[in-house]
Image 1: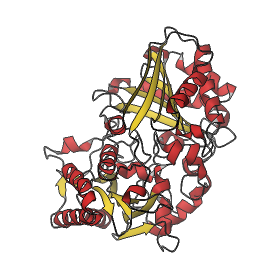
Image 2: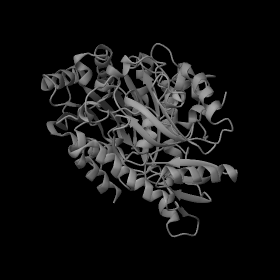
Image 3: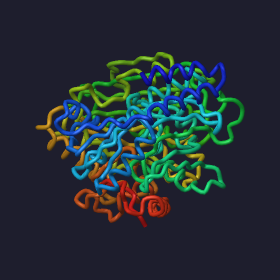
Image 4: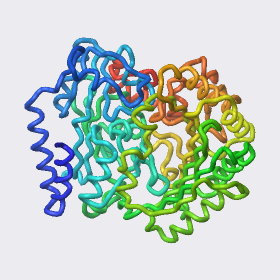
Length: 524
């Protein structure tokens, strides 16, 4: 029902933005007159609401509180603090670790009903509630105003955690991270107040806004609303965020491991890295090109290259062709699939299977990441090839994702995202179905990661090649001395020199550390 309301609000935009805001206001007022749904063990709904996307992590909180308004969130936070119970919040449920499913979480706050998307004329910004999925956000923004945000390609991910951690996707090389367009946040903080914070220089709460520009969810409070407007944007709503592409051009190539060797795989990875080293400056024509290279473990069967870009860019076809030629240069092996096509932007970004980790039967995974300021060293590349051809697991793989471009136009301290001169993100993952396979898959991906970063204590300590990790790809091993022997804390790997400032914000807004998890920002 709420999704239909969002769509209607978008269609009302042509009659005046005020109508959209009034419609949203009436919905909130109605929600605040009723109590949140509370589900406890023994309720037939409990098991259905318990699990997030990663089935490895299940705890049994005293209650799951399903909130439909900011007022209900306030009550939940106050109740948790009053009863000294740990509270954790969940929007889409796609946390890679047990940050919301720790065994000490006694009140799980489900924000999924808070999924409105619209335009706030008073703030001249678009609002997004935390329970809206990225697919809902893209659909509402395009339908109502023909704009978008440079967010991720997994349509079922909740906006709540995605935005707070920075947010990136197929348009980020062209338009930056999502938080580069974040105007403000509404947050229920630890003392039960609802605080609005914006990027305005004279806003007394600006530090709370800054902490949500990549500081990660679950650290400073419960976000109940985001406002989005590109810096310096003027004009009507249709000019306040990047325009939504009409169509996306995509070229995909698959190779079978039957024809690949370690040498050809190494050539693909090296070519991919070299292209990104050369073509990732802010404003470069090639910044509109978004490339992904994934190599499965040899038992998984395939490797693939994907490039996508706005089909309306000047010489889009030529940009895609030159990218493919550069990455495949010297890789003269048969292609199992070689396909180029265009498709509507909304179809590309909201197709249910896009980017999800397998089907409903494959919901166990471990994912670890590292930023790359340039391509792998020869020692790292040898480790990659060694681990993708050893006695591994069928669901194991390495994913290289293009970054840089406009994301590098922002100063490292302007937002909480400190990594601003990176050209790629490296993703090491294992995905499987059965609990009985946990040990083998976890061992493989953990040893793979440690081998690649053997020279820096098993983790991507910042240097001229590596630059830490991305908080939205949470990896609890970074806080485990068995897997991180570098002496550099997980928080420093995520936030670098921005961490002390995040600690000061934490101390100001949550001095009792009400909002915490295994990777959380600690009060200074």
